[in-house]
Amino acid sequence: MDIFTFPPLAWLLDTAYGALAGLSSLLEPLAGASAAALAVVLVTLLVRALLIPVGISQAKAEQTRARLAPRLRELQRRHKKNPERLQREMLALYRSENTSPFAGMLPVLAQAPVVGLLYTLFLRPEIAGHPNDLLTHDLFGAPLGTSLVHMLTAGPFQLPTLLAYGVLLIIVIVVADITRRVFTPPPTPGDDSPMGSPGMLRAMSALHYLTAVFAVFVPLAAALYLTVTVVWTLVQRVVLRRRHPLPEPARV
Image (tube, rainbow, N blue to C red):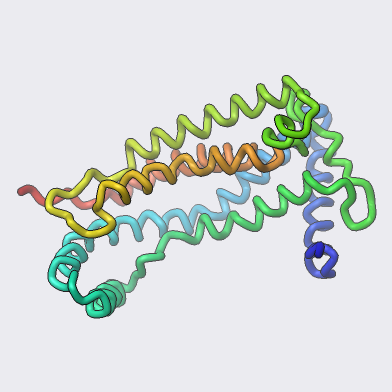
């Protein structure tokens, strides 16, 4: 079943297509065949700019979680044999601080529809019954509607696509590594909670590279969106961390 035959979603997809195609036409004298790629970059920057207030709330939530971490560890130590009591106490603590363990997740959730629309726009040969002209655009010769996995498994092989994905993936992986090194908190001595276990810490560290894995499966246009997003996110986190620093860990 094609969900985009549902009238509201069909209208949304066609509207997004018209907006991106119109912006691409305006940029064509400047960027030529790569106008749609430049349009994707500008749309990404616009989306991220609109989410700046959410990013600020995310930084504040991270600051609050860091401040509450010692009290949470104490609750885990006291009630580790009573999971139900532990959950109640933790929720009560979050309520008393007017926050939640899920605070700050909105930026990720808010971007999911944008990535989904870009994925669909550069995947379908037709949009609302008319040809999808966005598929005629490329990024320095790499078609915006081709994914790296599709090219490698179904062909045809295209060197520009391989090079474009290579550059994007290098950027994403470097940003992920910087983010992991700068923003992953060091292990807390004496923390025997499940979240402090070596396996969990390794899993959380690996999550930083998940965007690179996801990028190889989506069309190049969506991979470009993800790349600009992770770079913006890193810069924004650095700036906001300076404005909302985490509390210094207690000295033992």
